[in-house]
Amino acid sequence: MRAANSSVGTADQERSDRRGLAVSLWILIPLILLVTYFAQILESFSAVGCEGDCDLDLAFGARAAYPWAIGASVLAAVVVAVVSRRTRKPAYWGPLLGVVLVLLSAIVTSILFQVGLAPMHERNDRIASGEIPVETPPPLPDPVGDWEASVGGTPYLRFSADGTVDGNDGCNDLSGRWTQESSGRIDLEALVPQTTNVCDGVDTWLSVGRSADIVDRYMYVNGDMDSPIGGLQPSH
Image 1 (spheres, rainbow, N blue to C red):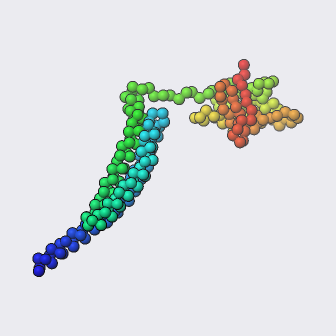
Image 2 (image 1 turned 30 degrees about the vertical axis):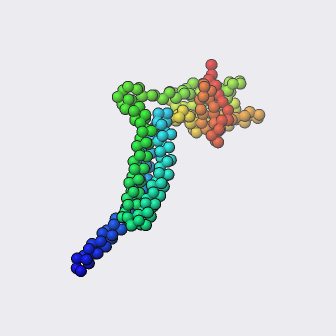
Image 3 (image 1 turned 135 degrees about the vertical axis):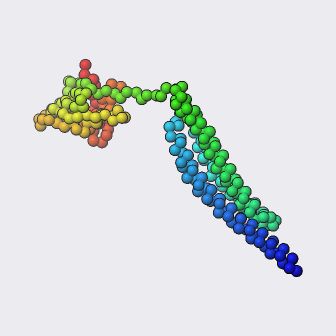
């Protein structure tokens, strides 16, 4: 009698342990998904500078398929768990399958993502070893010199290498300083009229110029709305 009670107690303990294991495995699945989510965010930063070299269709295609793989993994785990319960199989079979499939989905997605980035890593390695020369950006357009309107020579601007600029808007003299951004845009915020002449019928658009862009040897002057209000050509 005592042996029978001992056997029953052992069986109950085993069932309790299996249920505890099943619960732990079910809890483990969302934890794996959370860790994978943040890992994929960090992994995405490695795609910076990848344009033109990487197989982005493969890399981000794998990422796009990942949620579907997770959904299928969880569904498979639930189905196995239900079948196991009805057939009196161990309760942890379903969540264990879910953990394995979720981990496998995350690993395969990461591998495919890195395979898509492989051409960029290969290029960087070749640059580091000196096989490929590092591309140098083209020089910025040089504004130094005289620029004038296509009619009559005025308005005009004269850019000096020391960062000063002077000119005339067709009515008043202009003076100030200029700087150039890394994009090539020329900042004219400091350009102000130096005289206060009143000229009827004269469009003094150049006096409200705030920046300029040189494209194909033509200077487009931009106003307060950051859009072109006029243009100047090199003085010959």
